[in-house]
Structures are given as structure tokens and as C-alpha cells.
Length: 236
Image 1 (tube, one colour):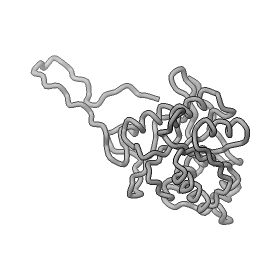
Image 2 (cartoon, helix red, strand yellow):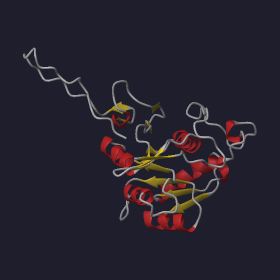
Image 3 (cartoon, helix red, strand yellow):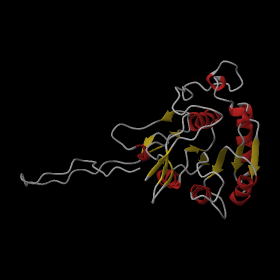
């Protein structure tokens, strides 16, 4: 397994103290952390891929509202992939469920090197925010998963986190993408959950636990030593 150095944007420093999850910062405000010698989010190019024109328009308006004006739109993943190969794209916001090439398939292709930048930040959005969908997106190599309906603050904070504090990028035989040990999901009410005590991060979706450690089997054998409850092998 190879751990590549964290991707840098516009001279930004990975791991900087960035409180964007609590208070979104205006990228245009001089003296803000966005303007603290780390470049400007407004200089990045955002590719929005969604078959629903209304959802594409909504996401575009959210980005514009935060001063992120370099936005490209694509109605399907094939067209989006052509944009990647023809011009510089810094962040992709893509729908999970699409006809033909899905958002998950698109992510796999990018991570396997079919696009110019396999470390490209990918934020997946979907009304299908169940546990299985989130795990599938995570295992494909997305950086963040944002449930629909889109809450502007949540989407913007995901972009800020992805760009300013990138996770280590993993290249292994079984997985290529950002470190999977964290994947935040915003709830529909705007409340965000980083994790639930006692549960792995991937077992929490929409702020609600989707996983429970199995109960220890009953036994009367005093010489049998049981494995600790919830014991699992550590994943990437």
C-alpha cells in the first residue's frame, strides 16, 4: 500500500486549522482564512454532473452564492468525463444515480487513472442516502457524500473541507482514493455528524447509526474466552 502526499490547492497547507464546519467563511473577504496566503476558492473550477437540470441549476446557484463562479455543467457522466479530459477541473460534484455511467462508475474510472488527475476531489450528492449507497460511494473513492435536498451550507462546508484539509490519498491493490476512515454526512436538518461513539464512521448515515455490534453468544463454558463484542479487522 502506498500513501501519497495530500493534494495541495493554490498553495494551501494540508492540515491547516480550518473551522469551516462551524462557520463558513466568505472566500472573498480579505483577511479571512480563505485569503490567508492560501489562494482563493474562487479560482477553482467546479464541474457539476447531474441528469436533472433543476438540480444542476440549484447546485450552480449554491456555488455562485458563495462566490464560486467557475462552474461547468454536464447532464451525464460521459459528457462530464470529456470535460475532465479537455480542461482543468478542480472539484467535481456528481449525482449518485444516473443512466448509463453512474456516479460510482465515474468515480472508479477517475481513481483508476482514466482521467488526468486520479486524486481529483469528488463530492457525491443523492436523494438515495441509505447506508449501502454511502458505503458504495465511499468504496469507489469519493471524498464526501451530501444527501439531497441540498442544504447550501452543508455543500459549501464539504467543499471547504475537501480543498483545505485533504485526507491522505491511498493507492493499494483493493482501493484507490482518499482515506476511508472518515466520511461525513449532513442530515436533512442541516445538523452534521462526524461519528457515533462505539460505531465505525462508515456505520453512520444521515446522523443515525446504521450498524450495531453483534451480541456476544451465550455460553456456559467458563474455559472459553469470547472475542470482544464488536471486534473487527481494521479497514483502510
